[in-house]
Structures are given as structure tokens and as C-alpha cells.
Length: 206
Image (cartoon, rainbow, N blue to C red):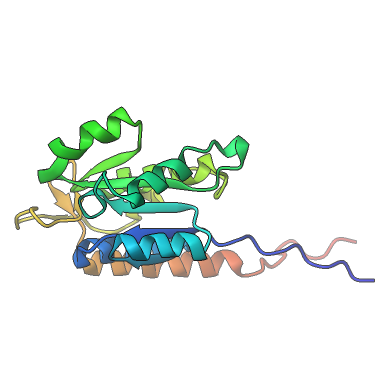
């Protein structure tokens, strides 16, 4: 009797709360490129409905949209506080718009909740996301090298204002939409090459 193949690994689900179209699109594009299942919602009501109807490993929430006084914040805080050893399967990362940092950062730090002030560097974002997913064993290892620093992608010096930018850069560099698309194309090609069976260049063993 043939042995049944092992079940496929469960896809990591990430729920994003953000009503900033540009910001939510950037987050989704980056997370999609990692092969994770991503859904964007634009209200606390929709967020709570998703938490009741589906299983999510991580919630990424714009704290300015969520606030810290409503049921969404308290619900997520309670769910994310359960240790992985005790069955905790959800983590949360708050995104804090820089103009609102003085309002929300003290609250998040007092509650010891993970956050990033936006704009932030892409590498910092993905490393924080992966660390939280590793904590609940949703992925096996953290992303310390984010896709080899985007491989051979060229960096382009940013000329425009960063007021509405999703990602900042430590040295005034940013990535264009074309560069991100090229990066994703190279990643897909690399993934396909890895899946191809290797030929035995040394001949068959006797």
C-alpha cells in the first residue's frame, strides 16, 4: 500500500488593518511576495469579523485607525498575550504614523506591544514580522537577510518628500515600484530553478 504524502504546510495568514490605500498596498505586495496569505480590511468592525471567521497568525494594524480605547485594541491585546507554549497562535504588530507617535508609542511601550513608527525601513518591517511568526512557530526561521538585500536590484535615491511614504531608508535610498516588480520576477525565477530536478552529471552508480 502506497504511503500517503505528508500534508502540505499550512499557509501563513496575515490580516492587515489600514485605510491608507498606498500603505496597505505596499504592505500587501511585500507580504504576498513571501508566499503568505494576506487580507486587508479598512475598519475595526471588519477586523473583528475576520478574527471570528478565520484563523490568522499575525495582525498588522494601523494604530491611528484602531485607536487604543475600543474593543478591537483590547481584543487583540488579549489574544496576542497568550504565550505560544500555552496555545497562543496570534501575534500583532502595530504601525504608528510618525505624526501620532507621541500619542500612541507610550501606550504601546507601557503594554509591551510590538510596533514600528512609519515610515520605516523595509528590512526592519520584514524582520519584525518574521520574528513574530517564528515566536508562534508559524514559520521555521526569521528572515535575517531579506531576500539577499533585494539581490541585484539597483537602489534609487529618493527625491520626493517622504510624508506619505510607507518605507523609509537609513541612507536616503528607496525602492521604486519597477524595482520591486523586478525583484519579485527574479525571486519567482529562482524558485522555479530550485524546483527543477537535478541531473546526475557523474553517470549512474553501478
